[in-house]
Image (cartoon, rainbow, N blue to C red; front, side, top):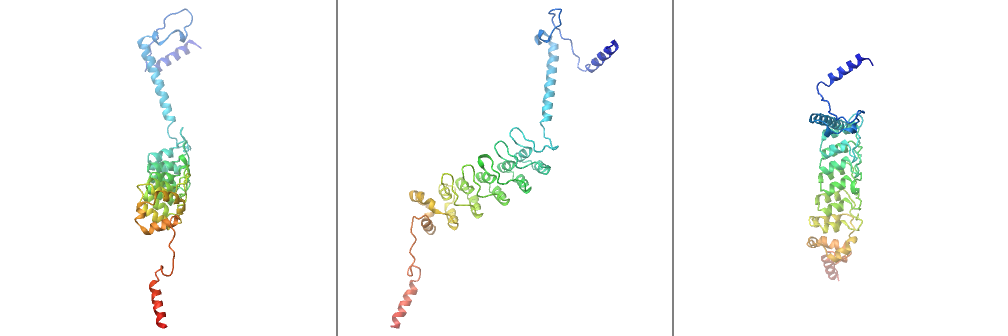
Amino acid sequence: MTVEKIKRSQSMWSMSTSKYPVQRLSIPARSPSVVSASNWSLSDSSPSSRSVISRFRKRSRDKQLQTIRYSSGPCLCGDVDAVDSNGRSLLFYSARYGQLDPAVQLVEAGCSPNQQDVLGNTPLHEAIEKGHLDIAEVFLKDGKTDVNVCGFNGETPLMASVTRGQLDAVKLLVRHGADVNACDAVDNPPIYRALQRGWNEIAEFLIDHQCDVNKTTANGMSCFFAAAHCNKIHIGNIARRLLKTDYDFKKDTEWLATEGCPVSIKDDPKHHNKLMVKARLQSPKKSSLLSSGKRKFVKTFRSLSKDSR
């Protein structure tokens, strides 16, 4: 390299560094040999050199953070299904924080509403849990969302809404084809969970939509047992509803004989007798001509027969 080129390169370097003047580092003379990086430390340098080095390190650190910040931002250029370390997509966080417009744009861009995180929950689970029914309806209108997908503990979105007592969410999910008999991981049906938690309106809504009232839990607990042992449930209304269905009261015979019928049922003799008969704790009354309301007709017939003699 010629002397002219060396001078030109040095002058260009001085121009590029003129904005940030750097002082020379005072390196103590150790030996006539070449000084390596291990031969001096930051403590050996002057205070001005330390400030330059700390400023250089800060700029490098800021540059790295800036690079990380830009690289971890949302990317909608063909990567709408990208997930984080928890398996959660952009659509999942839109559902969590109630961002309706981004959710609509992501669905239109092709982001899958069935993407499950590490717990098994989907954006629909998250929208139901946070109460963002407008976003849940966007997912369900798409027609590609699995409304009966099982998430954490085997809960479907319907089971999650029943557990939290969200009647509007239950109606929305049932309207879009949710299975009213889908059980969780411990085999609890939605009707049992509603009666267990004391949600009267949800229980009546599920009964009106032909849920399986004879479905029992893994421990053999029945719907009527859950209703009778919950202080929030109007047991009289539920008993009348169950009597109109094909509910089998035989499974409740044992605990009814031991604990007795709930007080509110005993106050209603008509329904109490029906319930006891169906539970086989009371025999039905024998029907005869005299006991069937025909007594007056029999007396009239006998008096006519005597007059004819």
